[in-house]
Amino acid sequence: MNGLEGKRIPRMLGWSIAYILILLSTMLPLVNLITIALVMVPVLAMYVRLGTKPFVAHYAISLAIVYLVISLWLAPWLGVFLVALSVFFLPPVIQMGNLYKKRASARTVMTAGVVTLLAELLLSFVVIHLMGLDPVGKMKQFMIESVQTLPPQLQGLMGIDVDELVQIMVQLLPLYLIGFSLFYVVVTHWLARKALVRMGESLPAFRAVKDWMLPRSFIWMYMIGLLLEMFVRDSRSVVFSVILNLLPLLMMAFSVQAISFFFYVAHIKGWNKTLPIAGIIILLLFPVPAYFLFSLLGVFDVAFPLRDRLTARK
Image (cartoon, rainbow, N blue to C red; front, side, top):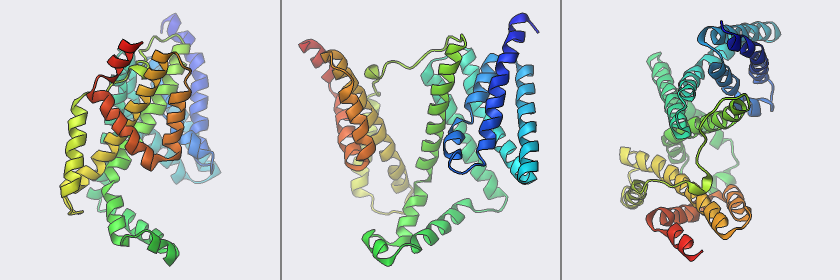
């Protein structure tokens, strides 16, 4: 062990303690809604800063402490659950950590993390199904029972058959999984990179938001999706399921593109960031109409040289 590695290990004790506290806090109501989103951050910091053997030692000791505390405090099976939860999030951590060490671009790191976590989720569904369980069927039954507990007047306001509503919600499962993976990787990358940079690591950041630009191929995907939505009516077809999951993702991507355009306008005009911040607030408060309108602006920003014209007029 060299001198630098020896100095890093004591500093990593703080991250190990933080990781133990995060895992333990997942057993606390309300608090776990926040801490569960941070579960990969300490492990990623330790993986990047430590060598393989020190990392394995820190990680294993942390899990052993968590298991013992939870087993004595609540139940052994909960200790096993937390250990399994930690191991589940380990592959994307390793994938992102290896790319950090290679100084890969932020987009490459994010893509690898999302794909790895998404692959794990899909593999988990396959394994559970092979074990004779039916998670999708149980989820569908849970949704039906939940909707049926609502007052009849409220069910009538939905304007849709309960079975059809549940069928659509189940078909949106890929969208949920992608959103879950994207959320965890974004939070992990944002916080872990900030912490690692403060510790002396030189890690590439994303380009400024004002410079973000989607590939033009996304426009064709969006237009094809909108056309297919007009003609495909069989809610149980594969094409309908693909459109159902693809269009919200594209609308979200082009809405982010619109926010990027707002940042660009503010930069070119010399304004403060009130315009883009207001756009973000509108998206959060009025998601249904705002995502549609913002996505159209995003499409125009990618399809036409709006930014070039603004620059020329400056």
